[in-house]
Length: 340
Image (cartoon, rainbow, N blue to C red; front, side, top):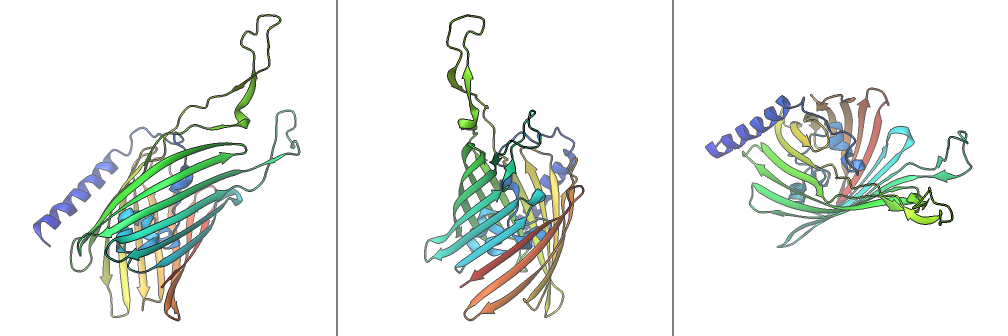
C-alpha cells in the first residue's frame, strides 16, 4: 500500500473513532422532516447492516454513496418492496444506464404509504367515519463518472414531498459522494454527504381555521378565514464514511467485509458493520449490525441472502433482508434487479 493510501486509511479511522467518542452529544431525534429518506432501499446492503458507502454493489450502492453511480457499466433496473412497521408499505424503483464518453445516469422513485387510517377525535374516539392516509414520495436523478481507474464521483438531486391527509411539505435535497480504490485487491474507501437541502413547512386545507382578530369586541367578524403556520423544519443530513474489503477464501468463495461510520444531523453518531459470503457468484449469505454505539437505539442485527443468475443475455439478482427492532419486531425487504 502506498504512503498516500495509508494516510487515507488513517484519516478514515480517525474520523470514525472521533465520532464514537462524541456519541454522547445531545441527540436531535425528531427534529427533521423526510425521515423516510433514511430507509435503506436495497436488500443486499440492508442485510449487511446498511454498511454500504464503499461496497462494490452497483445500483444498490447508489443510495449509500452517489459516487457508486459512476461504477455502473451496464444498464440496470432495480425494485424493492419492504413491509415496514405497522403495516406501512415501502416501495422503491431505480434505473441506471451508462452513456458512452459521458458517464452514468441514474433515476429512482421512493414511495411510503400508511394505507387508510380511521379519523378519531376526543368526542368520537371510535372514529368519525372518515379515513385519512400518510404518504411520502421521493424522486431522484443522479449522475456518476469514473474519473480514473481508482476514483469515481457522483451527484444526486432529490425532490421530496410528505403528505398528511390534505397537508403537505416539499423540499429539494442534494447528495454527493466519492469512492476510491486503495489497493489492487479492491480495498475501497467511500465518502458521501446526502440529504443536504432546504427547510420546508407544511401547508394545506387541514391547516385552515376561522379567526377572530378581536375576540373581546362585540360586532366584529369572528369567522375570518386564516391558515396556521407550522414553522420550517430541516431535512436529515447525513455524512457517511465507509471502507470495504473483499477477501478470496477459495476459488469459489468470496468474503466481503464492510464498515461505515455515520454522522447524522438529527441523531448521535453510529457505526454499521457488514459481512457477505458469496459462493460461485450465485449464492450469497449476509449478516450485519447497525447503529452500533448510537444513543437509545432499538436496531441491531441484520440477516439475509441473495441469488444471482441469468435470463438469456440479461443477468438478475434477487435479495432478501431482515432487520431486528427491539420493540416493533423485524422488518423484511425483498429486492430484484435486472442488468442488460
